[in-house]
Amino acid sequence: MRKIGVLVSGRGSNLQAIMDRIADGYLPLEIAVVISDKADAFALERAARAGIKTVVAERKGCASKEEFEAKINDALTAAGCELVVLAGFMRILSGAFVNQWHHKIINIHPALLPSFPGLHGQGQAVAYGVKFSGCTVHFVDEGTDSGPIILQKVVPVLDDDTEDTLADRILVQEHIAMPEALKLWAEGKLQIDGRKVKVLA
Ligand code: GRF
Image (cartoon, rainbow, N blue to C red; front, side, top):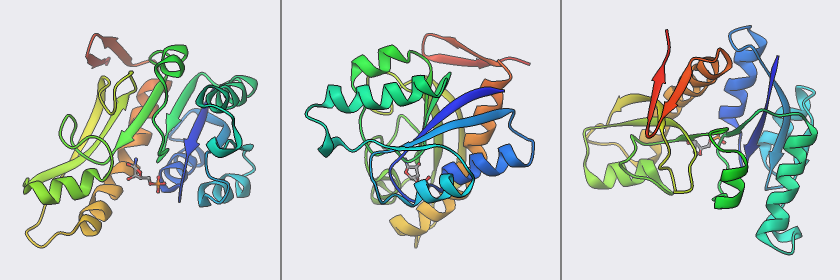
């Protein structure tokens, strides 16, 4: 079974979706470690309950960003991870870290990239007045939410949506999209060609 590491910062509903799809046999993967940059992240409880190894790496406990990222890198390497999954991890990783894991980091973003990158993708979509938004699963490059796109899911934006109501609608799709992308990766079906990700049959 190919091993992945999941980086989290908060409630961990995307982590839960991955755990559930591993448990029901859809995903041929093992989560070897869950790493959080917040000691009180609920995601850590979800992982611990499922018997998954957890590591807390807090930026404030480290003298530098390099030290912080080295801690994360060490935990991933020690656990034998082949892929890093960002599931609600709220920090920007440095170019050095991204290069160490070139094409081996996958992120989920709650908007249809390249629209509305960065924080509050759902709120940005509501404020802009777009009629559709959604989520994007992509490989991470050195930019913010700018790497090659694996797949996207679309949802309507309703006239009376708030950031929260749209976020709820998008989250349902996130929980489908991330396992789908990970399955394609696990089966070796993702071929990256520059900005484009081809899904092999
Ligand atoms: C999700 O909306 C994800 O797209 C964004 O942060 C949120 C994390 O939610 N990057 P959770 O921690 O997986 O519940």
